[in-house]
Image (cartoon, rainbow, N blue to C red; front, side, top):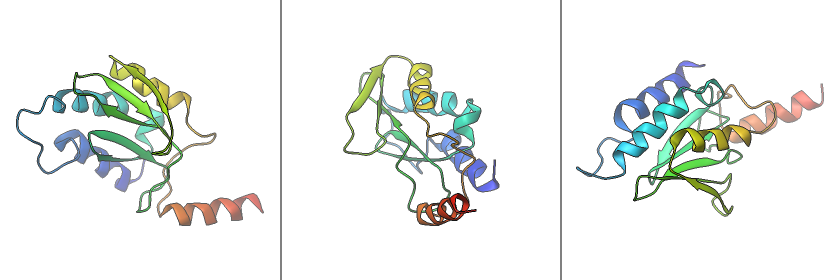
Length: 135
């Protein structure tokens, strides 16, 4: 795991990925649990995590623009989880009561040879992969 990936995970685990969340939000507890469970999985821990809209995303690269080829996990108002993706336009894969089940669904759908995160952008990663394929 690179220092960049480790720092991103640390930020999410300590702050739930944001500087401040609305006080008393019912989503904070489930989100924190989901992040903890995802971080415990070596296959996800090597990917670059990022958050938004109470969702935990995983990228195969460390810089903006992230890759959008891995499903992501979100929290529902009732404390449950959903798995969608890998793209925003993709259909919802499933909903579950359990963070472990949501994380398992993501792991099952990881691209072949996924990880560790590439230091650079999605565009840099694509160039690297093309060059690697031509060797």
